[in-house]
Image 1 (tube, rainbow, N blue to C red):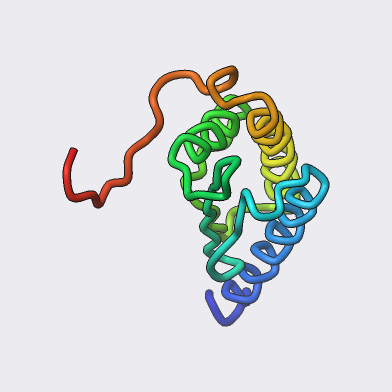
Image 2: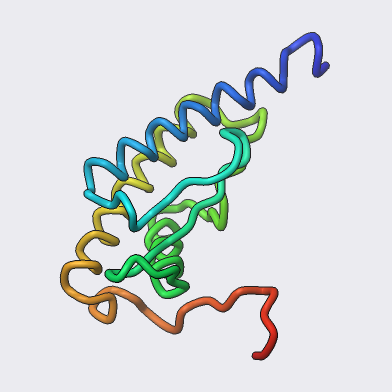
Length: 127
């Protein structure tokens, strides 16, 4: 099946499509230096930074909170063979809206937007 349907090629194509849309959102929402994509297109991870461009779990939490409110659960962006063009577009739209809130939180203070406590890294030395 992998050879007959070029599954790997499809994963990369969809990942590139999503990566392009996320990078466009970063630019349009003026988040360069505050939100960063890492990894391969078919397995993207993201890094979040605060107003001082320091790594921020609070901004990670805010971003994921806003995605969840839009029906997307994404601690990272891993595409699968089942993700259609429509799925990628819907995810990109949710990311754009989450980025819009992220930008507002950078400008107005995260406390106005974040509901609950920031997530903590799984691998940490102390609770």
